[in-house]
Length: 93
View: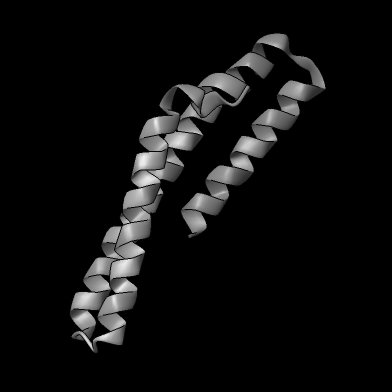
C-alpha cells in the first residue's frame, strides 16, 4: 500500500488545480498575454506542484521509510537512499 492513500483525494484535487493552471497558461500564451503575467502564473503552477511533491515526500517518509526503518536491514538502507535521492531532485528543480 502506498503512503499517500489517506491523502489521495487531496493530492488529486491539487493536481487537478495545477492542471487547470497549466491549461490557463497555454491559453495566455495563445492570446499573447504580457510576459510577466504568464511568468506569474507559471510560478503559481510550479508552487502547486511543489506542494504536491512535498506532501508525497512527507507521506513517503512517515509511511514507507519509517516502516522500513523499523524492520531494519538492507530494505531500510534502500528506502533511506531512495528518499535522499528524491529530496535531492526536489531541491535541484
